Image (spheres, rainbow, N blue to C red):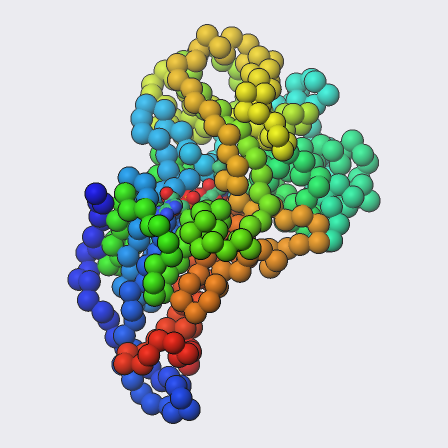
Length: 419
Ligand SMILES: Cc1cc2nc3c(=O)[nH]c(=O)nc-3n(C[C@H](O)[C@H](O)[C@H](O)COP(=O)(O)OP(=O)(O)OC[C@H]3O[C@@H](n4cnc5c(N)ncnc54)[C@H](O)[C@@H]3O)c2cc1C
């Protein structure tokens, strides 16, 4: 059984005049865009659906799950935990894209409550040194060098390790020091530029806005509609990169990513500590009390805490959870008695691409995969950070297929491009 969210526009082809070149002859023709199939209704697939529908494609989106959103979904009440993203960057090109369409969700800033850092086994206030040192670093870093090697040329070893620990928050890597300096420095600059916000009501708020706009533009979104293979004709695979690899059988669709254990806790409020977030530099753990920024995420008298812990290759989820518990024992005495709800998971290849030294986003798997297929994921060859990569890939995917669209009445094979 599949459910559908039919668009408000009638599902007829829309044509427009254009000049095209085929077989050496130039002529005016009415271009009829064929159907565009999008696999996956996460943030990337929904963005692709909007971009394509705006350009006149007749779009259908197939989503395996019972509702759109993918990793961008938020659990239903009482504890409205985000499945994946928390931070949206209002200084990024995706935010500008949303603004141009009147699709920006309501957002909140991090509360002024204190932050804590655990370093050398001790908890303390966020030190000023790494922040100052990050601000003093050169704006650009080399892609050919590791973050650790590059930092050691600019700051003393202790500060370098502190900055590497901070870089865990937005790379999710167990050792951000091993990553390309250019990759990590771009993220450090963005994270400290003051552009981080939290989506009120969780990221499902944004998913709802995107799905509604896509449907309003005529896109059909079918849920519980798992696609077993790439559809024939123009198609965008907007799944994870691993799923795109399985669907296409193309082993080159692979790129490094992080392994993260997530622990979500719903706790009784009252008598808790006064921090909003804790960053464990020793153990690469980040905990934030997101309902302090957005009280709608937890029922009255309760709060929602979401925690990410980097996992080295081979580390078991249970061991990562023990590290999380150890941090909470130190940062939140009595937390165990306050727990009302909890869930945990080990997430692999879920937090986007990481670039190792000698590589940049240009080296990741290309979005265009031949004449009628594009693969748009958050590990694709596209700029941005975290979810922004998938969004940029969605835009590249639509442009790729747009460049190869087939004028009406012409055979599809061998027919290229429209001026
Ligand atoms: C713990 C964690 C924290 C994160 N924090 C942030 C953050 O703070 N900021 C940020 O920007 N990003 C963050 N991210 C990354 C962000 O969640 C992802 O980059 C983004 O959600 C990816 O969206 P997507 O649409 O590309 O993929 P997905 O969300 O994975 O969507 C793919 C969709 O395809 C569907 N699908 C798969 N196979 C099929 C099939 N065969 N047929 C039909 N449908 C199919 C899936 O059900 C899914 O809905 C975080 C991720 C995690 C896991």
